[in-house]
Length: 226
Length: 302
Image: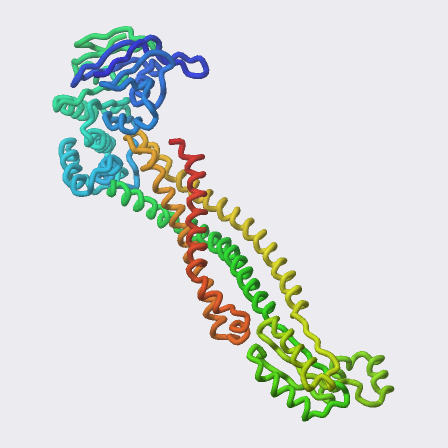
């Protein structure tokens, strides 16, 4: 489904973030991308979201070569991807319901569809009872669930997560990881970037290890060790 | 598509309300700029109208020999009254002419002295005619110089309100230049203020915009609300400016209506009310669109 074909990303100050990265992601796969801070995990996700362009190489998502995609198509391309962030990126003046509905509004869905699907997504992530709360009134774990609801509501082909458990305690982290696995079982591919050893070892799925911009290991049932 | 359109409109409207203080300030500047510009155009229309009317009108003065009897003069007056283009005939007797002359030159001691020296009244009696068309002069002049009264007539003069017209021209020119100058300056300020208002909105919503982009909002969807915001601000400026004009018009209509009726002020307003509305609303919307277009172009980076 996704092909990283010899991707190199060099930032203007000659800082090599990724060098000759090649791997593919199958439909419905769960991949953990691990490595130290600065290993290139975030860059990898940013390239996939087309926030940045690779310096060299091709990046293909299903039928689209992202490196050659026209700017006009970018928004429609992004709708195939759900994204979860460490800092949540929820709008603080909107309720949880409105935050999730916001995504559907952007996609041009009508109000009755929004009223129908938002509670379903909130139910799936387990915070339906917080629908009318503002993000500030929620715990970190609950906020991350809200972000996941927003990310999956458009039924993306892949869910990207950049350190989603970075600010969460151990117990909440486990809950969130369970949620990722649940979403994955429902058919969405997941690419999880993390440096949390515990997390990776409990998932027991494919692990790609990055070190200074290079893929140093790619194992089907991997563990996190350096 | 329609859902999107309404949503963009709603978002833009929310931005106007959310920053109501800034919005009001922007509308106020728009109001001043549009009013001044429309006012200048309006004034120009009125002066042109007025000058047109004045050009058509002529004053004709008929001076009689000193020996002419009053009865004969009044006969001529009756005849002239029957001319269709002649609006008004005033008879000024020799005594009245003297009185007017003295009144006019009462501060000029030399003239007054000369007058006393002459002793008797040197001024002729005259008829002052006001005609609605310049052609009347030829007809009146022909009638007087070739008819039965030619022996008692000294001379026939006319003047085309030339002085007044020239004065009006120079005054209106001055007002026009000044008005347009200040008007354009204010337009520039209005655009700058609106531009800044939109910029502030973009800044205060930058987080939302970032998320919108990442989720997959189209450029149009992101930019649309800001254009709506600009349009709404301009529209309100235009509407208020029009209301201001309308109010001033009503004020003039209720007070001093005679003067303004004379120069065709109210008439002119009524005739051009739609054009005025169009200029002010259209101008406001245009300013709003220009400002928000450039602000979003510069600060949105979509």
